Image 1: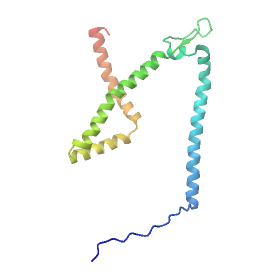
Image 2 (image 1 turned 120 degrees about the vertical axis):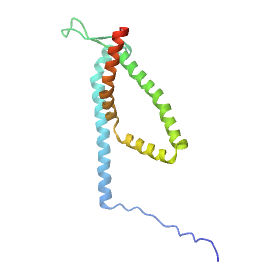
Image 3 (image 1 turned 45 degrees about the vertical axis):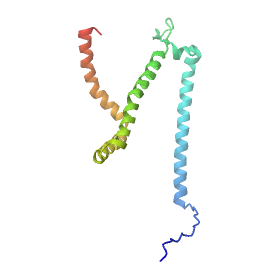
Image 4 (image 1 turned 90 degrees about the vertical axis):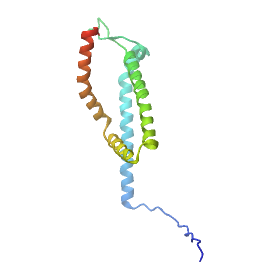
Length: 163
């Protein structure tokens, strides 16, 4: 008895789009184009609305440290710069990456190579659940929880150390 397997004959595959496929493709294409157009309009709006400050202040707007509201009648001019805010944003993002990346990589390595099968299943389910929750919800939860915690600590630090 021979144990050789018969190889199937190659088939020719042809893609024939029916009417529903063509309609769906058009709808998805229109949605994608609408998203791109809206993104472009938002970018144009921001560019047009911010052109005046860059004409008046130049790059000092990005690097300066002043934030002084004028009198409104032109006697004391407005002097706005976003240097400290921009620096703070970049610094906070960098610190968040320094904290999150080792935790994420270490957690992934633990789940993949070291965790027992039952623990791996539970942790994978929890991570999938966390990935399904928008980050805005985590942010709102953090504000609700940590604001009260931070208020207590800031009051304590202020009373004891004068911060």
